[in-house]
Length: 222
Image 1 (cartoon, one colour):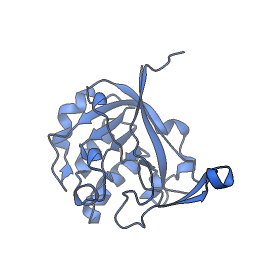
Image 2 (cartoon, one colour):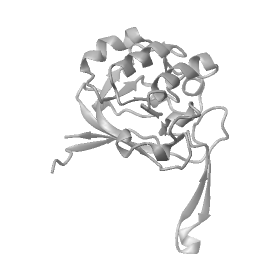
Image 3 (cartoon, helix red, strand yellow):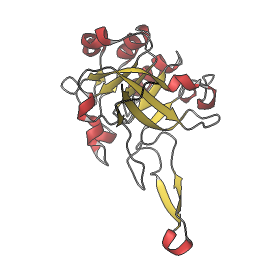
């Protein structure tokens, strides 16, 4: 049995009033029971399913697409490569196919490509993270899909841009129409930006009939 030498957590924490899609209600975390008073702790979290580190299923943008509970379990895991795009991206602008091409020789069929823009470090209630993040453009998404990737992850609020369908839809449709995984709101520790290939998992909650759900995203180093 191969045991990983190290695990890297790529997930943001969920908490009361944490950042989320600007048009959604803010997450509400209620403490229902307190150990000091009741003998145990228990909480209720109310939020949209596309909040924090989460997975998009095809059903998110495609009416006849698979919801989460119909996706095969191996869709949520695979070999991975991180593209360090921090010096290439611009606010509220697409990640183009030309930006991605220098990295494509690292990609193998079945990979989950992870896009590091640096915006995971900006997470908060601020304009940069919520409104002005760089997003994957349609041609960039098509380039990745044509390379035979298994999925694409990003450290931004969404793989598509905020404010218009022209920014939001192309990448989602290019990937989800081919049943490819999308993982959003990742956070990359500096150690994983070294160009090494690792194994990525983002197992979402098995929500019946839903187009997305929170996930714990992890990179395994063997």
